[in-house]
Amino acid sequence: QVQLVESGGGTVEVGGSLRLSCRASGFANCMAWSRQAPGKEREAVALINGGGGASYVYSVKGRFTISRDNAKNIVYLEMNSLKPEDTGTYYCAADFSRLCWTSDVPKFAYWGQGTSVTVSS
Image 1 (spheres, rainbow, N blue to C red):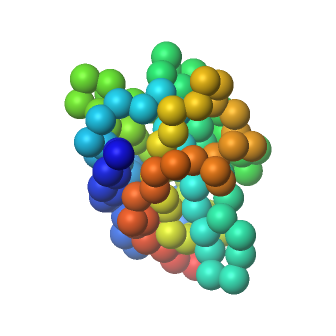
Image 2 (cartoon, rainbow, N blue to C red; image 1 turned 120 degrees about the vertical axis):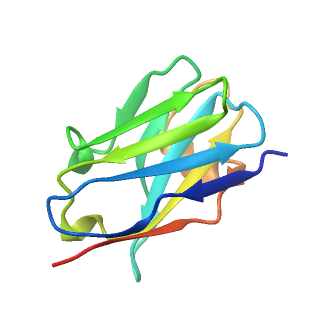
């Protein structure tokens, strides 16, 4: 069992930046950040594998950066140039899949409690 504890959410102005942190109780090769706005489906926004390889949904590419500190079991999501449509609850997720596929994120075994991000408009 992997416990995930998220922090860093808050309210920011359009164009601002925010850094989310996910502290894990152990190492998982596949880590991801997903977000969900009210009334919408949860959407995987960033994925990182054990070696640091990352992928992003197109809408955040160039603005968001996922990274991990394997020694500390922390995964970060640096969000820049924030837009109102980035508003939502952001969830950290982890899995022990052989391959880290973006399409598999909704089926990841472990999820954090979520942290709220509001981008003012």
